[in-house]
Length: 38
Image (cartoon, rainbow, N blue to C red):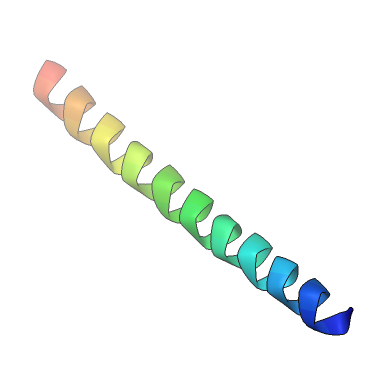
């Protein structure tokens, strides 16, 4: 039971890291687009 919980916790942490990375990528792309637009 605890093993299953650890597995789900790891998956949740993985998703959090991916989301944070995606957010940074999106922000970087937006900044680049804004720079080109100006």
